[in-house]
Image: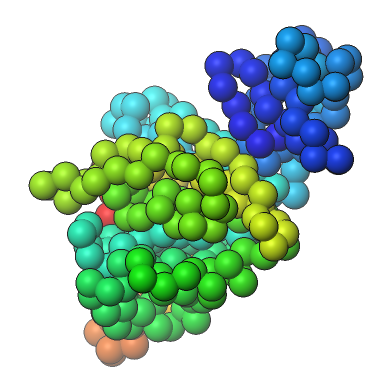
Length: 300
């Protein structure tokens, strides 16, 4: 399934034919999202005056989720939303300048990727305006794969990482995500916005859409995301995005919640000994706080 629009689902069948379908009643409330592999019945000719029916959703190999935790400041009010299905790679698009990089957002995306069993790739745009050294130093212990993109150069390295894979691109508005998509898939004409004076770009893409790459594979472009809530991720799973901190938790007292409130957390000992960047611990504890509703800052 390559796109959703007001109850109509655009699907591409095996020979490349585009078929528009509606969801069959027998599916109940089960949602269909971009990336889902579905089975169709009815008129699958692809003619503009016909509709097929989706009667089955195949089992997903991965499900990338985020919590819309800006709905209310309580766990009960937060809603889990499936971003895409069956993605193999999460491309976290962050600009190095205008707007500046947001490591908090990257941290959240990494946690979501590891929780979903999806490989992360950091894509740093606008590398002509600023160097990547500070961001890369922050993630030095993670061995996080990354690519740099500059407006005057073709995104060759990124294309190589995307070829023959199903990848989903996420990022704040204004970081250059739609510009990248237009270069990766010529003729796509995804809307490109500008960055506002306060550093937040206006939303340019309004819905997720899967696009075939010329060299093989697919990319799923998602709307600009201002928040990537993680209330659906367990406290233990949050550590998946902070592998540089995991080993230190073996030095924690029994039943340690890693917040530091108990005064005997192995993570504090690690920082005191200079074994990790204190900003990493601060970010992890902010995620713990936001998950419990104590801190609702989801932008990073």
